[in-house]
Amino acid sequence: MAETRSKCLDDCWEWPGNRDAKGYGYVFGKQLRRTHRVMYELMYGPIPEGMLVCHRCDNPSCMNPSHLFLGTSADNNRDCVAKGRHISPNKLKTHCPQGHEYNEANTYNSNNRRYCRTCLGVRQHGEG
Image (cartoon, rainbow, N blue to C red):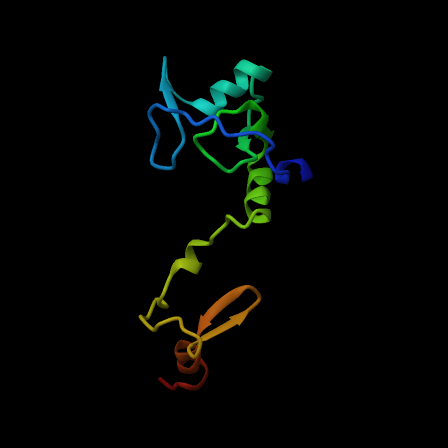
């Protein structure tokens, strides 16, 4: 897994054509195919079932074969976390479900989760 975090020594090969909303290049044939997967197969052969073609460079439009590696979904997730690219959707929320702001004074963090102090007070003490 350490190889996936190595710095790419050469430039990305940017796909100049169509890209999807996440930035992945794609081509049409019998079906829509992502260009990095097509390039991987051209250079290295078939992609085993259940495997992903991942990017060392973290550039979804890159097709440079030296930037591509096979991995499982779990491998790809670990790589994402190791590189600091993973952002939990909950971390993007600015308010708790009851509408209280997550700020320094009103947020309690425990076990990698955050809690609204106002809501905790209501549940524990009937305050609010």
